[in-house]
Length: 259
Image (cartoon, rainbow, N blue to C red; front, side):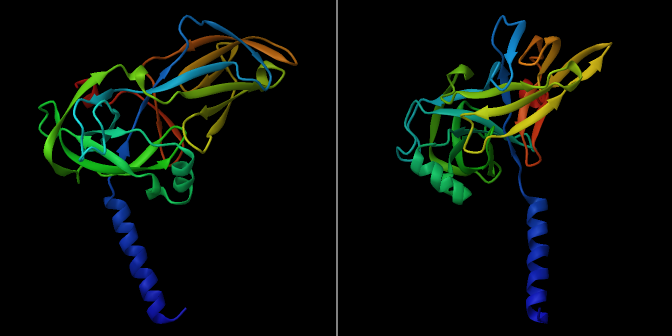
């Protein structure tokens, strides 16, 4: 490598490192909604035995059209936030075949508008864009702090998060024939093109075998070659967040609890 090229590569690496350090991280957290009234589940090896839905912690919809009609009135938007405790609301990604294929090869191909209410008067007054960085469940890239003022404000109203238009599911399957060797595998459905999965192994707790899986504690009651039965306990205070490193369990950030 010649001196000029080496210098250029070094300079580019330094700039990229600085940009990464300064980059704004936009977070999304998802509430895990287990089936109601289920205290025990029976699993057949290799088949889904439990589904839990992922929904946003807050969902709103526009009451006015925005961006010259690009975003119609009635559009659902889910909450995102950054480390500066700024809140935005984003449109749901278009997963139609053409858009999905474009997003596979170029992340910016799925960019879409989001909004923020900077003065907290109940109307959006600025807009920014995000694009999906990771899926299963979704994580976006963008900047709330760089949101640009809009020529006219846009009204919005809170709606039930269960009205989120994507039926994102966290699916559970098991393997193993003894309590000591049980594994529960997690995958995500309808949460993007990349299915994320992770195995969780059993452990002994007070002499009993159980599997911790994100928000769930599965006590192993019986197991044989083909089936297993679990007592199910879930923790409603645990939320899920996708990061570049994987899946995190987090509590609701304090500033969002105040909203």
